[in-house]
Length: 599
Ligand SMILES: *Cc1c(COP(=O)(O)O)cnc(C)c1O
Image 1 (cartoon, rainbow, N blue to C red):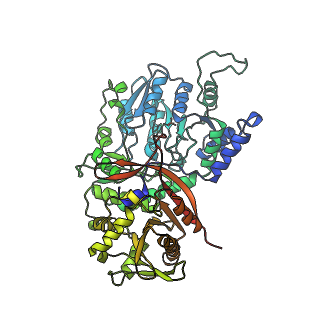
Image 2 (tube, helix red, strand yellow; image 1 turned 60 degrees about the horizontal axis):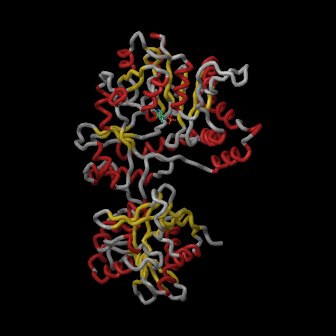
């Protein structure tokens, strides 16, 4: 793992946005939401959700899958009935009909939106067809004008699987408001989350009452505990509803963020030959829950290899769903859905968690271009160069006129930071120094110690000097002796956050003291020259002296991640220790930040 990838950690495909608003709602629910107030959040959430979507009724459920099941049961779908479901969707859409004994019949999708094709729906209608289940895949709405027209003509029910599409709309109307019933998901990877959870929506009062009754074990409301038929229990807790309500209040903002993230992808990948990105039809407003791409035939690489190579660069992705009729339980169906079968092997969902910033997307897109073997200079968008790179270009041309930042040591003697340049690569004595500091004993002052086995000229060139937005400074004492080094890199360009990294020095009290002053000087420089809002520090183990030194500079500890050392064949790497709670931990990745300004 090079320092660049370590700096970022694995970029995951999804992740919610949780603020104090969510935390406060949940605290209130868990503290007071009992006894006479046991369903307050549930009722408020249901009413607010119905109002947002534009349906008369909404009922919280434990999942979207549960809501789909209740929709079908409530509409009286029974064994022998056929339900039209798109060939490409999550298995829940295909499973739900089977829960009431019906048969899902898979129809083809459209090449641009990847949603079910109205033309294919018509082709698959038989005398047994009772309902259409449009799925607003990855957030793009289905062509609801065409689908509602077909349903009217053939007298079919419409049950929208709106699991991924909270906040999306078609011709100005929210998805989930068109059909006889609709189902949403608030599972943890969706655009709004309640942990697990879902919502059943409808405009039909009888269906609403039927679904409520079925969701309460079909208990007879006039006769305590008397039950006439088999019911279900797919209910949501008040605590989850509190979280869901807070997310609903922020849903427009969450959609905006997803749209911004997609925009960043579009800028960087939109004109790339061989890549088709998520679409947005003129009638549609896509919530871009999962920005995705399809590799066209122009690109010979298999998606499996493409994803594996991205993963090596710490970018996690997901493949498209398998065609439903290729799964064992549905394989007896003879599917003639050429678009779906052509697309699924070529589709990839890209990372789009709410926590991602523009420079993360930039890194992901650079990695995609790299994996596809594109020459970085010929790309439409030039390689990301941020403020550090610009500063280096302006001020730093060779070792002799390298950028200098003077500062005062604790002994009141003048010391300085000096930016490393390509000129330093040629000096073996210098390189040997770095090696000593970086591979020294682990109790050295916040050194990366055994982080990097290879920290010779190759590392300095490829991982520091060649990287556009990072720099490494020598720390020089008053005699001009190099006693350590200190790095700076962009943590989030859009938020103007920087990270101090690569802290390593000689083992002596004087050096450690000077390093503390050097960090202080670098933070000040970053604030003044790069107009930083915030500075972070990451260290690789929890050496107490080093931690105290950083805390004395007003950095507050915000995160401590246990690490283990693994052998990956070409050298040891630090990996996050997630699975094994029994391994004794000696090394942590500690994040400090942001630094509070001194009074
Ligand atoms: C997420 C998803 C589901 C399942 O939602 P749950 O709440 O986990 O049951 C169903 N259909 C589609 C299209 C989905 O994306």
